[in-house]
Image 1: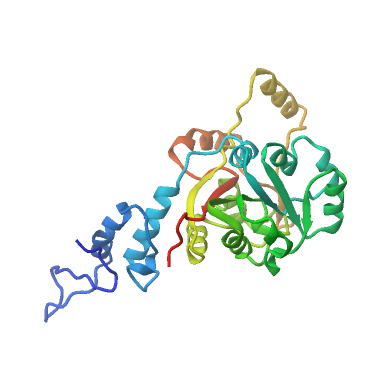
Image 2: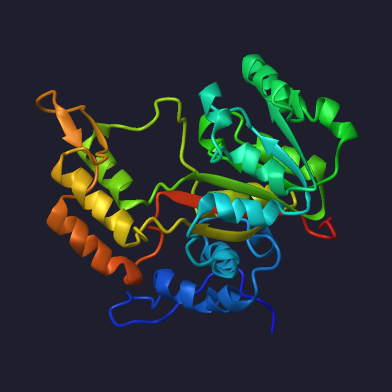
Length: 319
């Protein structure tokens, strides 16, 4: 049975269709006809079945890709990245910490990746940060990947390319995908972590017009868009999920958290109102709504602060 194509119109008869019996195109019927594509395994591009990106066949093909990519929430973002990089050749894009002093922290991402990788090369455009990393013994290249691989071409291919909290800052959004296309080994992975546009506190802040987030952020990446960007370059969105931000506290951590709250020293995310009276607004939910939000967690997806995407280079490229 050949797959349904949005190019072939669907029609159905219904009462009151008109004098000549001609009926309007039924969107519901079109979606029912394209449903088998959702369970087809997600292989191929939506352009293989239709030229219309709004057609049911295109949406069904994308739904198949996302269904195959969804993964359970990630408990610890940095540990997840460590395990993907362990014993492999790694390129860390945008490796310089915003604050050079953070490079001395055991929690600094590049330091942890370099400790577990077979080899880890960093690349960044900030000369002072690159110099500070070199002084600490890290292997790092000063280069702008918008100009291609440059000196990194001699070091490729890599098993893993990491872009931690980077893509939301760069205007050339395809830069990472082009780098992955040129520098990944067959079967290699580009791992991207970025703010989740669907996180409830972020959605609520946007609806209320609150300015609270890093003003250097340009845009938010979302799953279907990441799948499309990958496919345009012959790559595949292989995994997608969010971080699990629910507190997992032991007795002592819980006691300290309660003490901080009672002393009003706990962390609050706040911002500025952009409409109405100028004032500082809290981002997120109050105590009662926050409790309800926690109870709803098992029923809802994509609540975590961060999205984690794994884009893979196929072993054999599509022509």
